[in-house]
Amino acid sequence: MTVRIGVIGTGMIGRDHTRRIQQVLAGAEVVALSDYHPDAARAVQADLAPKARVYDKGEDLIAAADVDAVLVTSTGATHEPYVLAAIAAGKPVFCEKPLATTAAGALRIVEAEVGFGRRLVQVGFMRRYDAGYVALKAAVDNLIGAPIMVHAAHRNPTVPEHYLTPMAIHDTLIHEIDVLRWLLNDDYVSARVLFPRKAARSHGKLRDPQVVVLETAKGVLIDVEIFVNCHYGYDIQCEVVGEDGIAKLPEPMAIQTRLDAKLQNPILTDWKDRFVDSYDVELNDFIKAAARGTAAGPSSWDGYVAAITSDACVAAQEADGEAVAISLPARPALYS
Image 1 (spheres, rainbow, N blue to C red):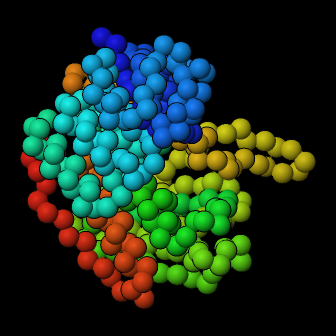
Image 2 (image 1 turned 90 degrees about the horizontal axis):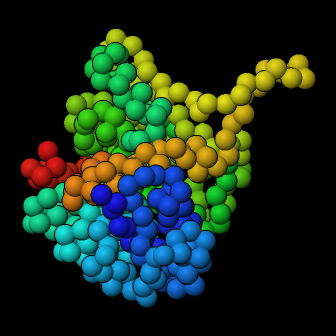
């Protein structure tokens, strides 16, 4: 079966996912495109999917009889209504983060999916599909004993002027929030945020760097450094300390050189290069599940938990180092 996919939102991510489906992966084709700017959709159509139909409205694309599954890669504020429409139509939907712009919105999606009675939503938390994280999880599950602590870092070379302090949570830490919860098979119970002195390259409306401290239900203590003006490169670190040993996320594969009296390893500068392969794997997972009329991978519940945790971390940014509690309702059986 070839899964017929409609893509809503044809910006950078939507275009790249369309390329991925059309040129890299098997088992699917893009048959429909929609964007707030129709010319952007028509440009992707001309470049990558000439047989696809362009729709003025995402809702019409979702309702189209020849669309089996939907990719939502539009602006964040539109995610909730499009995902809800896909659930109502009974169509598998892949939604890039955030699932919704509020925890209440994410909960509405969870409730709609539970009401439908079958998983239909996959959220675009691609780090779960990164080969390094997959290997790290195997080590955490099987080698190092029960986890006690996690030390992690998310560093960017620079960010634009419109990047504000809360975005360090909603746009940056959100990836660690999901992947560390998956890595540990544990839920968060509290969050604290600590600020060292402000880095010289940080702009006026951004407090950078910051350290987020998360505590889990099993008593694991996690510290995550967020430093988005580190200057030297894009650098993701993660080390799990267990009862019997320590496991560390491997560095991306790179050529080591001995040159000019220096032993050197290059450091990436772009997040797309760091996780490019994981995007292929995650979308392939979606296609295989969509062919069966369902969804796999990160769920609506995972998106909801990420939203709850993000809100607590943003509140903790204003709490002068005090802990902010994270409380979750009972997990629905659909996501057990």
